[in-house]
Figure 1: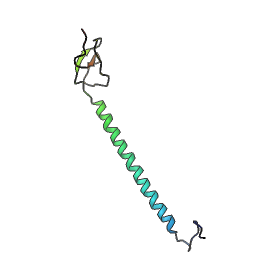
Figure 2: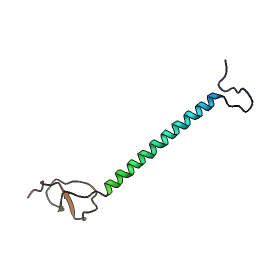
Figure 3: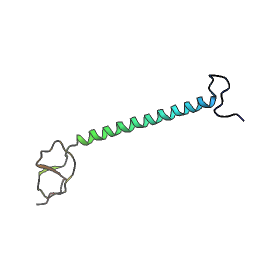
Figure 4: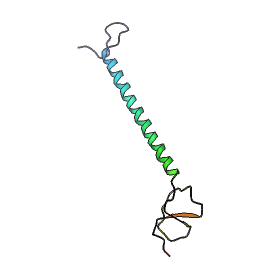
Amino acid sequence: MKSFFSFHRKGELPLEYIVIAVILLVVAAVVIWMIINSTKESSESIKQATTAKCDQTVQSIGTDCEVIYGAFPDLKVTEICCKNGTIKT
């Protein structure tokens, strides 16, 4: 029975080592591709979150309404984003 770690000639690699190396390279390429894609999706969602605009009703703080929470760069510090039709008088 041939040992997995035995060499036929000095300096010659067995075929098993070459097959394992190719499989590991393919797995590494797939893992790197997955990491790059997930990073790209994360950066796009972060960009979308930081550029959000309040497309509902803008009111001053203290208004009784259903507030839409988020980071809206188009609002002043003293304003909130209220859902349309929810302002109570």
